[in-house]
Length: 313
Image 1: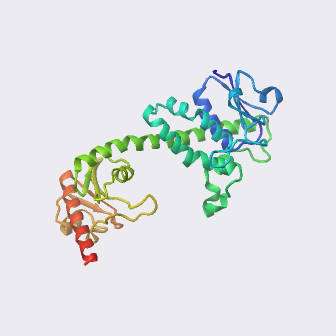
Image 2: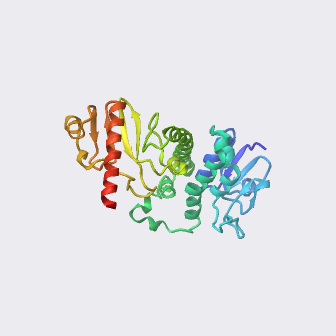
Image 3: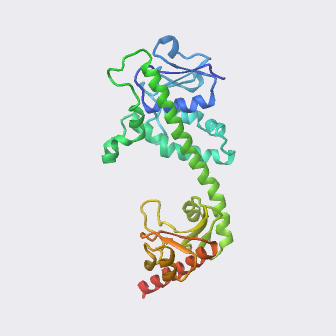
């Protein structure tokens, strides 16, 4: 069934119905957005999808509310908002509509549900307190969406609907960017796994361009790798590999003697012609040529292994 109308409630809005509208308007661009609480609109019919209003959850009747008694819960016991329900039933079709390869749809659907949809559901239902974010509490995504609502004395007719459309455009850009990032990580994973296989026992992974690499290195069990080299614009990067997704500790730092040096000073200290920069945090360095970057990587590996041997001795 192709709906003619996408129906949600009128008045003030929250992130869950705005984000639901992002999904549905991509799938059904010809459908008219209707914001109403009138019974004739929030009663199920064959020409509409109703969400975040109507007091029922019935996918067969195309109504997806979560405010009623007996509202649906996830298998984990956590509550759905309308966004979670719409994502559950339409998320995979949405990803396909964005051009996500079929082989990646299920993984991106599950990952986006866990990292983006579920937090919106929990906040909307009061299942988590945004104050846990401390000073960032007012900068969570649902809170930012709600700042788009009209202020108290903005009373002209249609103000809520105009604000909803503005919020919808912003939410769409964030969702599509987040999905694009997830898709890019999966594309990168294939390239990185191929490069890991080619590198064999080398401590240095060379990639054809800058891309996310840590997840693939962990997936491949390439615990021996310490540094990554790849081209960047007109130069080459040498970077460390973080030990975990949280924090910034690396498997190995670049040599301490290089920290904060650039160009001639760095060349003099490391002995590599073309060495151009090393961050004082020792997590990234640059060189003017591939050969220089690889030479710096070899020196960094030697320095790291020698340091590890000294500690163990």
